[in-house]
Image (cartoon, rainbow, N blue to C red; front, side, top):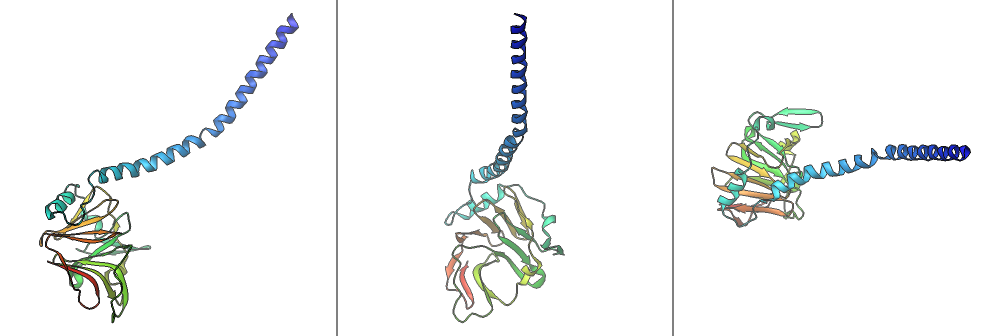
Length: 232
């Protein structure tokens, strides 16, 4: 009887030891599984919350009244414009003075160049279907170069050099904020960047699927060297 009890106790001890060993192996794997779960859930959560906030009221599409486009831009709280007066190119930082540079999360690169006499906001947009190079156009064709000065919107143009974009690009403009500078105010969501020019009460929508004009802007035959033009 005593031998049976000792044998039973030995088996119990062995069983507990095996369970402990199994638990140790499980503990070793446990940090990996939650880590992946946390990583995959935290990154999408951030993106989801940002997307949800911006997509709850998505950027207006072409054809809506200018008041609706402006209201959407102004619905986002303003961000401090002081951090957008520089351009970054590799390790080189260029002070832009009163000019502004910013980049959207989708990669649209925008900059003003008032110090060189251009009142327009210029943006480089990765257009899915940019306007083709017109005949008899000289210089490097930039189908996604958009100039917006409030009275005209020009899409696609030829350039002998990078112009203002030689400085690089500005800091990223996050979702759910708006950036004010000069006569402009801009806001972006995951699909489009909208900018209004208050002086002209006109606005432009920049997205991969195209460039749209609001208010008094209408499409006209562009001058030589320009792909598409809208005027008020």
